[in-house]
Length: 168
Ligand SMILES: [Fe+2]
Image 1 (cartoon, rainbow, N blue to C red):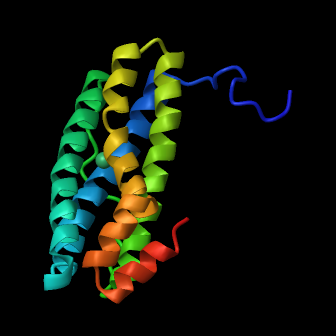
Image 2 (spheres, rainbow, N blue to C red):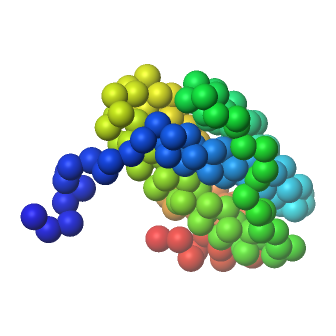
């Protein structure tokens, strides 16, 4: 069968799942820090709306971090204490690109993680993790869809509009 995702689920131990969740947790810490910083870099008068959105994301990422840390604890491991490195730039276009890349990465990882939880029969955990996806997905949508596009057109500085134009 060619490259079907419905192939037999990969073998995974609870130990390995906890390790992977700790990487996810580091990614959530990274997101908290990134949104705190990015919301301020984008705080010029013209991008107040975007900055406000990013501040909301910062708080959502904290909720995600707490959710993931509970799953790690449930699996009997110590939750990770360090963020993945945060990339910053004084160029809003660059920064939004970093953000989008991170969010895409997050969505991909949670998709895998949910499958892995299900393979272990951890359906409640899969359900918890699925709640961490929407924030990431909403950022993907914001940077990719028409609404955010038009929103940025009316409110954003040229550099940010240019950044969004790069995203199909
Ligand atoms: Fe998150």
